[in-house]
Amino acid sequence: MKPRTQLRQALAERKTLHLVGAHDALSALLIQQAGFDGVYVGSYSTQATFLAKPDLELMTKTERLLIVRNIVKAVEVPVIADMEEGYGNAIAVMEAVRDFEAAGVAGIHLDDEQTPSKCPVMQGVPLNRLIEVDEMCGKIRAAVQAREDADFLIIARSDVVGTVTRQEYYAGDRMEEVVARSNAYVEAGADSIMVMAFTERELDFYAERIRAPLVGLYAPVEPHPFREFERRGYFMAIGTIAPLYMYVRSLIDGLRELKETADWNAIAHRMVTDAEFFTVLGLEKYRGMYEEFSIR
Image 1 (cartoon, rainbow, N blue to C red):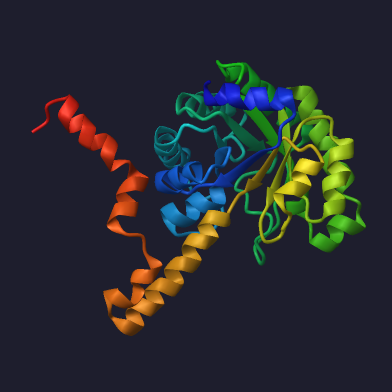
Image 2: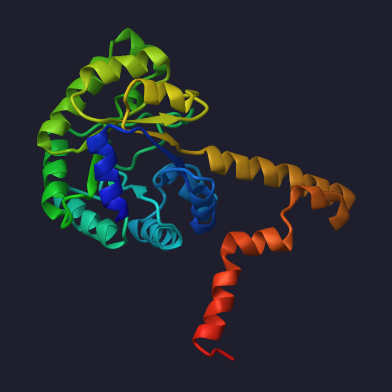
């Protein structure tokens, strides 16, 4: 079954899928081998690993697509890609959808911020601003029209929380605005809605009010166990940055120890063996290809 069809079937069967964020092809392959339902490719992780920069919309569509294509080739599970704000107006969204669909992803999510946007949980940078609802609805209609495969998933996300402080978000009851915008995006043709829920009460709030299958996120600011999304019938729960943070923690600690000891043997306990590494990469398959195709 094609990855896109897998997603559509899960949507019809009301299964809750567990996806994790990858920043490159190797991390995606490891996610698949660990048994997760799919891979998410977000701006936060890819800008960090590809550019060594924070999520301030510093990556071009071409750079994101390069990463996405390699990830899709590396795995067989569905891949969901962050398409930011569509790289321009509704016409640009149509081009981007064609590009990401051709790259082989099972779906994308499209956000309603003005560009350039910033990660909404990043402190000390200017707050985001949103485009008007009708403009975002036009982008969604354009995305629906541009896709060639009806199974290609279009997920919409409203970043109301990124436009105000957290205190203002709750004091002004801005979650109602998230609901209103999200339901408008569903009417425009979005297949699913991605939400940021910082508390379990918010998980309930959105599940009760948004008229579409929901994609929830877990991260340090949203530390929910997968079972909480599953219990509420969310379509997906995505651990957006878990592998990225594990990777950085491991390198910081390991490199510090290597610098202090200057001894390979002192850090051997932190590393895979040659055999384990070759197994991850599927070297045995390539050995067979040397024989099959008479490569010398």
